Image 1 (cartoon, rainbow, N blue to C red):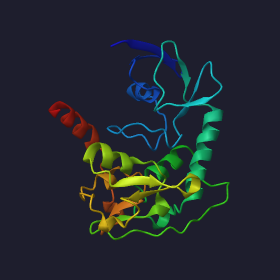
Image 2: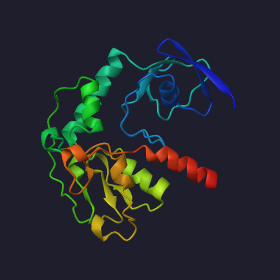
Image 3: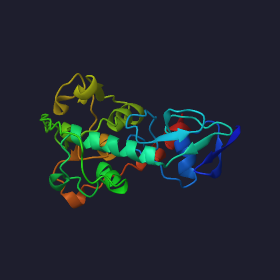
Image 4: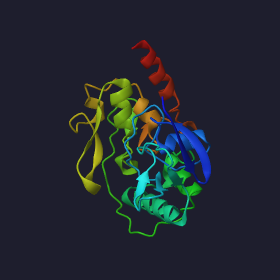
Length: 235
């Protein structure tokens, strides 16, 4: 396999030709923010937080889906990127109801942690404040679409790892949302295996286990790389 040499934030980095900028940066210990990426799942480039500057193009490129190239020069941190990422986070907060103080995921939420890390302490755009109906029809789990950020981790883990394809995305633009089966209540789904993988990979409090207190709502998505490697060996 061909090895590519590139420069990330002034450092010479070697990476396999199949790797993305995000993977190469992570292996080198270079932080690039992301909310939709999760090791063990396919990349989709949904959150746009991982955009980076690449010399030779005026466009910002998503690090999670951009393959490394020989001689590529990448900048992961700049005033332009900081401003853009903050705006993305503000829009995510404004488009949903992310009131951390009353959320079961408070203190264990990736959206909350990312806002703290990137210094986003207030929202400068008007809040949409949607009132989406909570789905508590499942015996074990609860889905609160008001806290969903459309990272589609639940959709991908259900399809790629569990093989059930219970979750999907419906609608366009701000009206987009994840649904179960053909927009039926989760509790009536005939495809759901109640495995809980979707709950474990959700970065916010959109998918939670019923009866869990704040301190108990820690999620464990680290099972994905193990499952993927195991199933790859079996096949």
